[in-house]
Image (cartoon, rainbow, N blue to C red; front, side, top):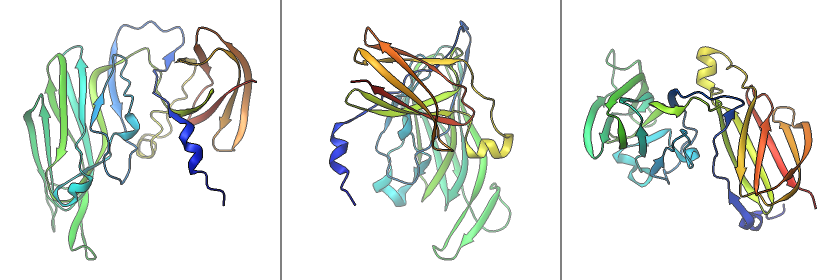
Length: 278
């Protein structure tokens, strides 16, 4: 097998950009809801800054797992820097827990919420609780939403588990922190020299949301502006991620180092190759 590691030297991260709805001029604000996709691994990033649109540049690093005292080597509680245009709420939903959890939320370095999330035999505050003989601990589910009131203005919100093992966050929510002109799409990708490779996901296409609410609405008529693209001619390929085939292609010319990219309808997700024509 060929060693591909050295190829990564030329890969540059793609900073997420907002995806807008075509011909939309809505001054209202909506709730920013983020379903974390980072799984079982040490939390590398700590600070997550939410911009004026509701975009988080390092959003792929927002942890789903909040590790406790028994996994200190993996702990790095997330800190959100966010501007609330008006007074609102920060919410998160705790789904699964291993052993005893303890949720602490701080606002501007002051503790504003503490909640013990124990597990044990029989009935309790939990939804389910099962004894794991292999680890000699209880594991279970809460599926409970915790919220704190946030005044208008810029704030720092820290979320941590000071309990024993780990707890899992289904979503983080910031009321009124999302531009209503944004499409419900999340973008990730990378650059390689003059080429760009993107993965676009319908934000509501999340396994638990699909299980509980069905498939999300198709996102139509959206676009994004890609900055720092070298001028020239590009071939753009839109890929169906389920069939592994190209669904459509087009050629565009870039000037002023900016590419306005009109997106096809997205029901679940899609991949895009933006390749410079030599």
